[in-house]
Image (cartoon, rainbow, N blue to C red; front, side, top):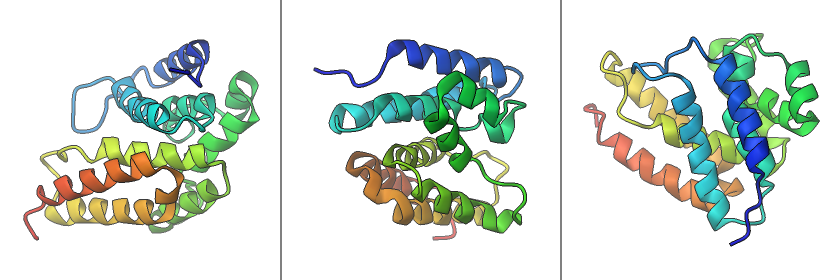
Amino acid sequence: MTVNWSQDKYIAAYRFAAEAHKTQIFPGTDWPYIVHLSMVCMEILAALAEEPDIDGDLAVQCALLHDTLEDTEATYDQLRDRFGIAVADGVRALTKDAIHPKEERMLDSLRRIGEQPKEIGMVKLADRITNLQPPPHDWSEKKKRTYLDQALVIFNALGHTSAFLSQRLSEKMAAYEGLISDR
């Protein structure tokens, strides 16, 4: 089997993300935030095994770093200097831009992701797959429904980037539907 990603680049991105997110907990859990990033990356690694024509380094690094600009003090320049412009641009596209009203941020991000290599779209699919776990107990049925509806928007916008991840997201959406009582 040919591996199309570098363990050294994985470790560098993992360490950067772990340090950047070191005080954060994944919402609705008591897990360190790096667990979420690892799960997103695991989805990418599974896709790479099925779709070997992907730039694995770009996908893996962006998976591990995808929340650094949005949720930490890390800067675009730090990402660019450490991981290169393609990774920094990918992470920036995956970042919701606070200059837009909250209800417009995801669509703006999806537009910017669409301008990037397909690996960036794959990261967004992997992120939503990972986030479609049982929701926090304090989420209302309306919030759960909105989250599932957003997953469909992501699926429709980016599903073409990976057949493997599209299938995974479709399965996760169906399972998540069963967690919503307003069906």
